[in-house]
Length: 554
Image 1: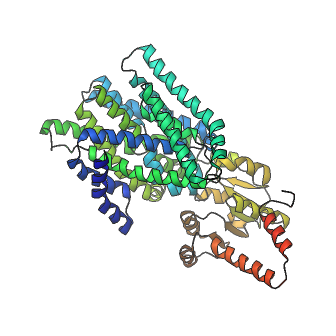
Image 2 (image 1 turned 90 degrees about the vertical axis):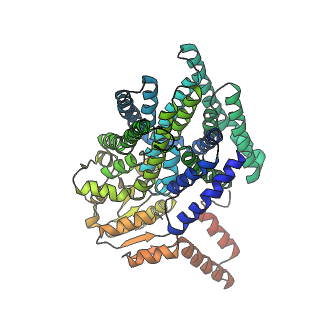
Image 3 (image 1 turned 45 degrees about the vertical axis):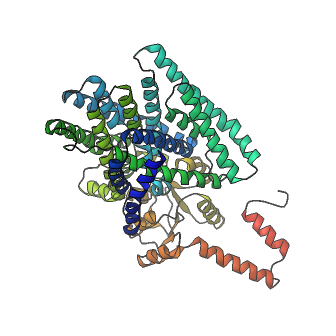
């Protein structure tokens, strides 16, 4: 297996350099690299590597899940996930039967088209999840629900027979692992943190130990290791602000196995017309096209329609739908297990793998150009606008005018709002993070709960009568979209560095905040005041503690 990993990285390395040099999506190039590496690696080794790789990636996804945040959109995403499984899965299974597949194999085709990839979506939407939280939360919640379904399906398969007692026993084991994860998360993880005493290395070792125990437990009772790894991920408390070193370490592990995952998908691909006859190849290729069409077209359409029905804006619904346009890694694990158990023929297995590789490649491009896809559909009148969620969750005073619009209500946004209230300046906050909904309702006089990149949100915020617009989000994607609206009030934006700030200024921003530069200016002012005796040591300390929300008694 180590030799296989070495071969994969030796062959995939130049492709990664190419992607980095020309700013290309890495997933397609890794799959192509894996396709070439497959000629030098035995398929049994690749299957084992895929199982271990996916199990570890599922662990990192479990770690990233923030159940409190998912809970804010759970009802909508639950409906979307279940309808996706029911509608798309049923169509896939029906088409498989029409094509002459046995019902058992057609079922696996239905599973392949119904489930979306947690790994691919997380890898491709890393930036968007932070800059567009409704979309990110919906996507993550849909994938979480589908992953639970996939785990139950895997456990039922693990019984080996279609009898109630073995299936119930397997599912019971799964429930026990999830319960154990909840106990570890609540009681063991805080105790382990105290023992580590702030040592990142000890925390990483502790987390890996938890993973090993869960995987070992799963293998000991005959449960697929992916069940144990997913439960182990849920056992880790999600708090990147507190455990920043630990989460950086886990992120590095994830990046390593993401590369292996895409490469092993490519290595498992068997190209039609190469190893089998023409007739069999045509049948396989037809099945591949059916799986790809259902995954890339039908599944996003179903997801978009359901979310729009639930009152989400067309843009949020469409972009969330586009994030589901790939075959899931859980579908691959299910297919591998089915192949090993003799429930799936090699031909259908090859078709599912090839379709997965194709959809993972196309998904990287649909995510890159998702905004263009949405706008193209919107301009052609394909998407009808719905703003039920924005209207229901917003609070805007009827007579407000000459106000300041604040985009984002995190730490920076809340401090800005406090200042505006002290100045008795009317304001409206635009926010779309479900986790901040209660804070908005409790703390802000006027707010619009909607997507800042959607025109209706600004109409709701009465931008035509606004005095100024201040965006505290550091996402260049959001900032450039705001500049496209060409608002009459000047736009005050935030940028992560000077290069982006210069670009935003050239594109029409009134002023661009660069936090590092502002922090440096503030530091220079305070040091100068201290050296010139304008500020005492006690006053400087008190000022610093006040900024941190502390007082002398803390």
